[in-house]
Image (cartoon, rainbow, N blue to C red):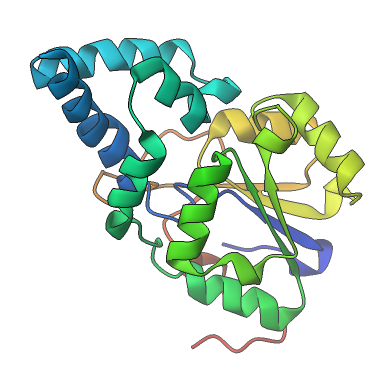
Length: 224
């Protein structure tokens, strides 16, 4: 994919489904949590999943949808502990670490901009070790706004001044990319396969990459 790196100062990364394999979160919310909820309420796994999907869908796009504290209270399950127990399933998407290392060498700033709850964010950074590659790690819960809201991007600009036109955002959510585009983010990319166990997505409205090798090399870095 042809990217004019001279026009970019900052690369903003989503975390889940972009740098990390979304298979962990899909497994957690669509298999592990429904099983625990089924056991708690003497439900079949099918009934448990159906009930939870209805409740999850009602909050999609809202900050609560991403909030472990909210869902722990709603479901009566210690989700932070459950995620801790499942942490061995957390994994990076292919070439994520290589790309972050190349960015570090190239001199481009890398920011992590995520909707992940603080507890989930800390767990995943600790498990993967990617935190040291970012100049800023921004959690939308700190602003009480999801990335799907245009107001989030205004708050980000206020707290971390930057030129949106000289930023590249890579995110697997088109709703987030819509809000970022409205906020003036200059270049936008999405991920064709956020969950490595699922097929590649099609009919996406933004340019999509299958893996980060498609945006190699960076200025001053020799591709391996």
